[in-house]
Amino acid sequence: MTKEDFKAWREHVGFNRKQACDALGLGRNTPQRYEDGKANIPLYVALACGALAHGLSPWTKNDSGRPGKADRETVTLSVTPATVARFKALGDNWRPIMADVLEHADNK
Image 1 (tube, rainbow, N blue to C red):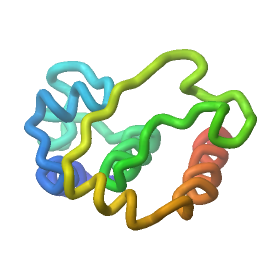
Image 2: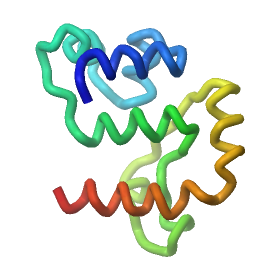
Image 3: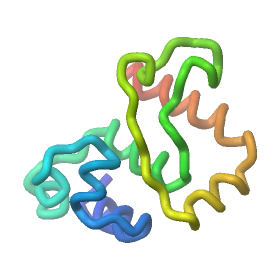
């Protein structure tokens, strides 16, 4: 994810920098550093941005029967009504895709 991609994502989901911090669990100045190109954007942040853009919530073991990252902490996500509508349009098709993404991220 490039600095331009990050800013475009933030604007697409309708977040200001503080909302991006809250949604992604980042430090207060981190989005600015990403957008200025002063910090590299880690894969897990890019994946979280994709999940938020599609209205996905944090994964839990109830989704596939396996323990996951959500077992270690709870994260609250805020999404726009448009994002919720896009997510609902996917139906259950997002579940296997997200499982593949998480498995790939865990193997990095």
